[in-house]
Length: 460
Image (cartoon, rainbow, N blue to C red):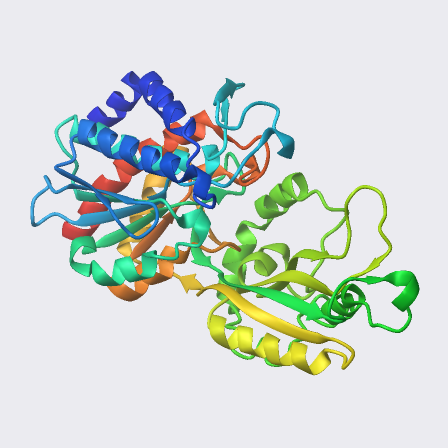
């Protein structure tokens, strides 16, 4: 069965690529209202292609912003496993002024890569899943039932997904959840993520005088809010890089030596990818933990942006009335987002000087997630990667977050697999984002093997 599907992928490889370019050319930027119609156009494109692929039932589901594209193929029968596959079709904003060499929404193929916004994050993942399913359906049928769920709000924090998942447990019912929204640290050595960090996003605003003031008239008498903000921020970390907020680490689940040894297997690839992509003068952070552990098993507190006063061309000797900072924390098991926010809020109130006022506002939260690597669903993925890549994937803990993962774990309670087919060095969210076509085609092939392997492990 899967051999015919793999042959189908080879025969239709050029068509798949051209269809991929069609989807990439739709600027489905979910964070901008001006692209709302484009997001809907991308959803309609995917729904139509699902129907062409042979899915029995395809719907655009209204979730209050951009539609979820939901397709069902249940042709394997009631006794076969059902796999719910998640991906997202929305993308980050992109403009030539950001440093793109070519129009971000006019896909360019060069040196075995396609350059376009969404190429790696995450339209390549969406199309790999859709085309793998098409290959199986069109060559006699898949060994499992397949439900495809493609979201249009992932880059906008998935604000409506929690309610949607909770209200649609029956429709989403499955035996395994496959999440395809990640990337690997190396082009040749595959890895499988089994952990994701949670996130808390906040905005800190520091107020001083009631309005901007002339720095010559009032400088030296008013505590500059930008300076006060910098003083507060400077107290959020210890010199060793650890977070100084009281209680911040109280619930952190420290990996045991067996898990640390497992994580060390992937360390050379993680370090090589860091040197290429981060390319900072040297590493920074908690010296007691290696780079992989800092990324996946340790929580963080980051300053994501600062604003205040005058920063345009020329000069304006202003003493600002207020200053703001964007702050986020990445969380690990068993930290809680609300509790983390409250601890940070209380600490900032304690260290704020009486010459200014400070307010920390909660913007967005997401909880950490860990999956069982010994589950048959995960081991089936290991075997599929071994068959296609020729190498056993390393298990890794990712530093990022996928909001829907925790929602699906909580509401469905089913085994989960986190698939990655692309390379981390492909500039996701940045200028000149791209995807390696050979890795993209391997992703399709992996899924055809995976469904076959999964059925054997679950039903025998």
